[in-house]
Figure 1 (cartoon, rainbow, N blue to C red):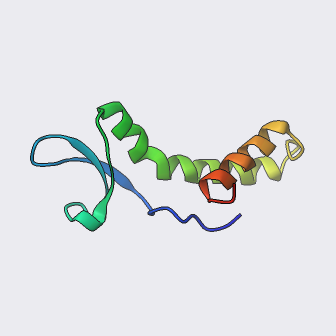
Figure 2 (figure 1 turned 135 degrees about the vertical axis):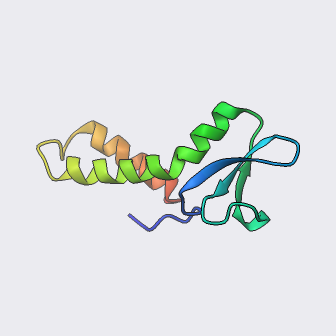
Length: 90
């Protein structure tokens, strides 16, 4: 699998001057370049902000499953398809 092409995390939920949530890169919290996405709902903001961590956990799980008796599991194949989609291969 390739290195991800998305903006690397960690991401955080921030608020603009009107109080609307948006997603930003934690290392660049207040500039436009640090903005990953704007959102309308807090629950969406939390999910989007957690995406880089979810991705890393999926990558870890893929390595663990591939090195165990689950290496031929349909769920591992599904996980690999999902990671390929995230990484822009599908």
